[in-house]
Amino acid sequence: MSFAAPQALRALVARALENSGASSANAASVAAALVAAEIDGQKGHGLARVASYAAQARSGKVDGRAAPRVTQPKPAALIVDAAQGFAFPAIDLAIERLTALAPQTGIACAAIHHSHHFGVAGRHAERLAERGLLALIVGNSPKAIAPWGGKRAVFGTNPIAFAAPRAKAPPLVIDLSLSKVARGRIMAAAQKGEKIPQGWALDKDGNPTTDAKAALDGAMLPLGDAKGAALALMVEILAAALTASHLGFEASSFFTAEGLPPRVGQFMLAIDPGALSGGAFAERLETLLAAMLAEPGVRLPGEKRLAGRARAATGEIEVDDKTLADIENLAR
Ligand code: PYC
Image (cartoon, rainbow, N blue to C red; front, side):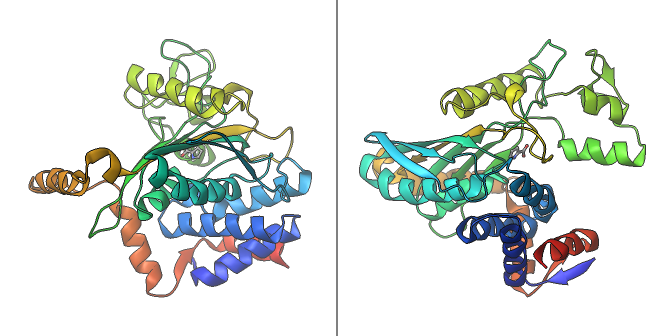
């Protein structure tokens, strides 16, 4: 493991992406998101993505120079066209515009069209909550989960993120992907030749499997069984149908540089909590959280990210040697 300062890492990642054809604005936006994910302990959405993002920018699968465009078809509805570029610049634009709009309209939404991997969904929701808004964000991703009762993957892992502002504490953040476990855990088991527990995945014929390689060719099981599959369906409708984007089973991989752009979508909803609650929101939320915390052993969701940030604030963060070396090569 190596140690590096967040600011230096952001500059390094941005240079790696610019060398691969990204505009400097896009490279800075992507670098900020990936380093933030690394700091928050979400390494699957952090620096490990740089090499594949750079390869996709080089091959043209992602348009690294795309400039997201926003239109406002209805007073409280925004369309942000990511234009087959990276998701983060489009999300940044949506956050900026929703922050201005939602306090005027009470509730506002943004449909991000023709997008890419949007990393840690909870971080985008949290940024809206840091601006005083309640946020709900969903995004679809390439096929991974079968519809309940089916054999073949149709839906993505389709994360759902929610964040609520708090007066005297960082926002409460809830962030969940809908597969029972992250696909990265199955990939890691396959690499090591290890078995996976029963109940994580199906093989390509729809049979439950403990063989990690067979699971990668098959489908992942949703958390909460039929209920999770229903949520994955809901996310496809909000994130892909509503954004005129690719459905999970139509989307190309977020990892490989070959093929057409994934063109997935994201849907973001921002609510002014004061407007809808007549000013009672903060008190009601704190009463609820206090009741939870009165139970011994209870922790609020999302606390892990705060621990990562506290460590990063002391100076340097721990980065995998090979990942860092790959980024340094790309940045030369
Ligand atoms: O956590 O599964 C996930 C995910 C997919 C796209 C963005 N995050």
